Amino acid sequence: MLINNKNYKTIWYNKKLQAVQIIDQTKLPFDLDILTLKSLNDIIKAITQMKVRGAPLIGATAAFGIYLAYRELRDKEHLEEAVKKIKNTRPTAINLFWAINKMMKKIDKRKTKDENENFLLREAEKICNEDIEACKQIGKNGFELIKKVSGFKKDTVNILTHCNAGWLATIDWGTATAPIYLAKRKNIDIHVWVDETRPRNQGASLTSYELNNEGIKNTIIVDNAAGLLMQRKQIDLCIVGADRVTTSGHVVNKIGTFLKAAIAKELNIPFYVAIPFNTIDWDTENFDSIKIEERDGDELRKVKGIDEDGNIKNIHIYPNDSVVYNPAFDITPNKFINAFITNKGIIKPNKEGSFKLEK
Image (cartoon, rainbow, N blue to C red; front, side):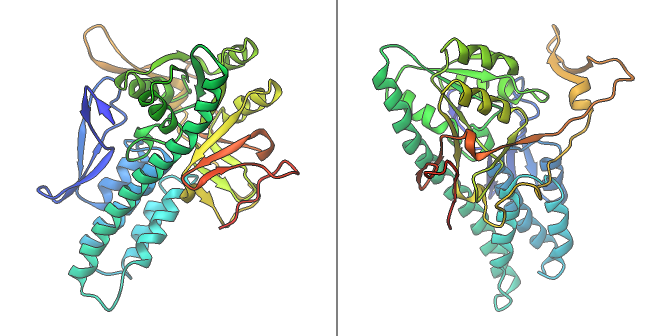
């Protein structure tokens, strides 16, 4: 997608440098900084410091991490410690575990180390390319829902998003934003209400940044304003992404998603979750066993901004002795979701009102 009218992906392999390159998302929207990752340690830092984030992108980065680790260690047996380190970076996003398992299964003892190394690089790049195609298909499937709403209206279609499930959370196109980008290209009049998404403000910093670069009308709101807008019928539908979906259709996503879904249900506003199939946790039906990541309290205590001299600064906004709790995700029960927009099609609840996803 576009940044300053130039096409970018979030992650790619630079053959000349023999390294992985990423957009440092902690610097957006103020600076566009390209980072070069040459080792497993670089990959781990990029994920833990959220220089890359979003379930599909975390998965792709983990895949490149396995490649770089194998390039360093040159042996599958010695990779186990590296695998543990990558798995410990972000415990909630299922794509990370999916990508690691997919990569590890590709190592063949019958092949030479050079053959395995080259194959792992191709496999990581394949994961990226497949993610782009999956997001494009999500866009096509979700577009039909937006088109249907547009047919009922004579004016703008208003969509609510939460956090960033845009192209910056994937390799390109995004999940929740893919139908929006396609609708824009099909000349449907779109306006997006962008939840600020405290504490890291990924809606304000990333989603609005994306939409501005694509020329899509959008307005940033504080997270708690969505209920009022729904009550006033200023939101036609909600589309969010997910970091993990159980086989019963429970959705683990950025903290605050559950509240939006519950309000939308109460006010009869469609609430959709856009995901590629590799975001489904096929081994989990109920959500009790899912580990919800708790992040550093400084994400709440501090806010990042740019001063009048153009310097990016973090400033304290809480009293020094304040106690904080910072869960990164919440869980939305399946009864609050109208449908999943996937790369395989639209999955709707059954007659009992629950989801039962099958492989």
